[in-house]
Image (cartoon, rainbow, N blue to C red; front, side):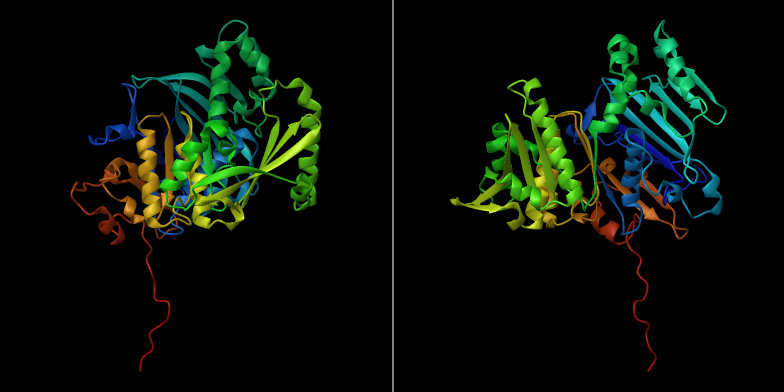
Length: 459
């Protein structure tokens, strides 16, 4: 689960005078009500939900982009355009390192992983992984001072046999400021982690970033609908869909011609899909009968599941019924709001351990639907170890009947162009105060300030 995320010198986030980084935290505050909204292990209480409010261009999406940038950099490589991502409100920032750090809870332990990078040159300056203890002490796992060409390992990686391996890997990149140690240690190292269990922390932190941190933007599908391909979920899914007033009463997986589907794909995508299908056919004899050998393709308005059965490829899609079962509708015939709800259902059906981040939760949704989804999520999350972080404009969510005060965050952009992140907990708001009204009046910042659109002419 996410504990905290810190960022500096990235897009609209600059270094503050009193604080070195902008911090977003899922640590529960002093609020005593709605304890089911938190995960309490006796040492730390973490929130399962947070809503980030703010005007357009205030920096809400930049917070999401900062998390995504860090994730992509570790899992893949520096994203395109990285050299221009530093905070441009000050000229000196071009030659200052940017800072990214995530604190997470894994297997009842707490870790902080981060790095500094000079974005204008694409050069990493430092990197670290630390275990955080309940008594506020830090236990080093590894650190790199890349500028000095130095590295250090803590006791976790300092055991006989393992330390020698670590030295070899670290020395290979000792003077290489273009790569991260955590990334290198998760490329073809399966046998290492099987032999040295203590090193598995490097794998677990990496896998959390890769598989458990799910970041979503408003112009991209949230779900690949794989949950619908499992027939065991049909009744539960139908009940959820009906509860959101979409008019859908059922769905079926319908077979469609594979050739027809592939013919609509761009040439390069089609070639890639055909290659993957050929590989799946060649690998089919190696798979067990219970293993689904398939490929899911998802676009904003379409879903296709290609399954290899022997030397044949079967393509299926989802079609929906509205009251009359004999009449089925394709996804492209459903409204944008319905498709958005179908995407969000994956979160309500999710397993433990996931942290979802959704930019513009309320896109395409009626305010009542947004409210109902968050309410449904919070009821589900009470029984699971799961987190949802959203950015939104929907003031109906500023409701103490629904949310705790520490679940409400604001992003405000100063005149300098820099963004500030802060929690409602930082204000001495009374529990009976109309937060939505105060927010819209600008009490907490994060609302647009309009100038005159049309100049007034003197008569």
